[in-house]
View: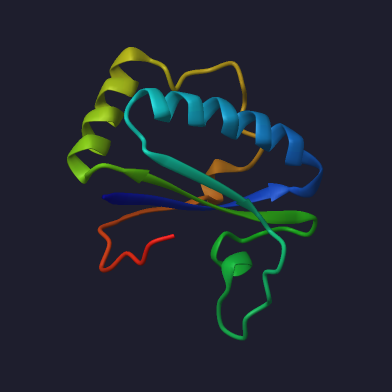
Length: 117
């Protein structure tokens, strides 16, 4: 198991556009081997004293935080999928991302432990 996680600032009025963009992206990732994708829209994101989700992505007034993660079988599977997706051009779409991708945070992680559902 390998996890790719993102924190994304999205204008509140773009929630439905984000949902459509994420559904399109999820379809692509699933075709290339992603096991599970969770898209979570901000419900409670407290302001921190030193740092927080908003500060991390330089969220602007009126933006909501999306916390999303993808579960892949392994790092090798993700790396191979990314290589194929770029080579095949499937990530180039007419659907424009409804957020400033330059402020998005991305990180990939190997799990330390997993406690079942």
